[in-house]
Length: 428
Image 1 (cartoon, rainbow, N blue to C red):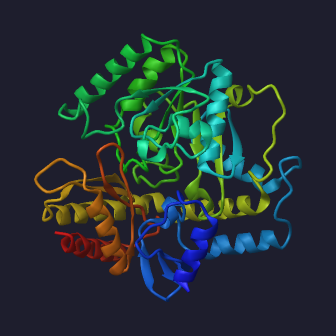
Image 2 (cartoon, helix red, strand yellow):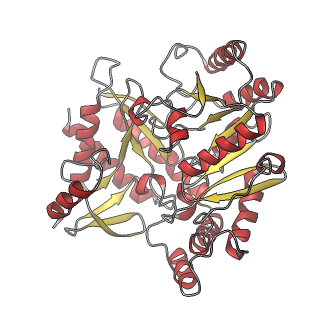
């Protein structure tokens, strides 16, 4: 049945639509932190549909909210008042940390970042954008144009002029050998030098932890130092929290809070986990920025009632069950366990991460050279052992990506680490 579905997939869907595994997997259902495939095999899910199943599969509270809302009305568009949308916007605005916040809902992180770019360039009357090397911001024309990761950027054409900044990757590049304070100072000086050569850009967009790039991040405080330089020139800061938001990093509810010395971002984008699988994205910005558009706009599917019901139920569950705290506690244990595993494997260059957002960078043993073949082999071996993980990486890197639902238990973390240990050993 799966082979038949694969053939049909290839007949009607694009060649560039990536599939994991040599024998691709059809996931049919899930519960908690586990999923099952069409053949009845059970897997511990350490990737959550690319960080999207944030709380748990088939979470009863979300299922109930969606079912009840579907029995009333699914959708009406933003042309009509929408109580669930207003209620979720109120909660997101309060949680964002942005003063006088306004919230606009979209259907994806790509669309959220696209909207943020439109707001920033309109507000600042500039089409120049600063972005981080090794970044990923989506698959629309504008977000591909600013993505600093060649593997996910199929065209150099763009409606924007993009300038790329150092700092998103701590352990590679020209400043890797510096200590944290020196690293930040060097990146700030590079930013100042860059700004001296160009007209003031509209904004810097940055992921606090780079997702597709392999879960890399700068030292705490880098973006606060950048913000001080940018604010002097009126340049906005967009925090792309599509993967880092909602407590996934454990220490903070938002990734930007590790860089909060000079205040919150001007614009914050979110998606993925808030819907727990339902299609929700959004933008939060100060009112003066959000309201800068001088023409009509709506969203046909952004903020639709059924997705807002899911988001409200999911956010309530996350806060009431302190899943941010669970991410910090269980994620900390998992990182230490994986570092102990890595110490026995010559092909592991680094285990990094925060909370339940963990990257394992792989290299060819005895070198600093990326090893994507081994990353793919570990992915396959982990699946054979009953564990689903992701992979990523940017320029000259290859990494395994681990991002389970935030309700992960200590026992499940230990189980996953043991499977991953066996998978790594099988590739030696």
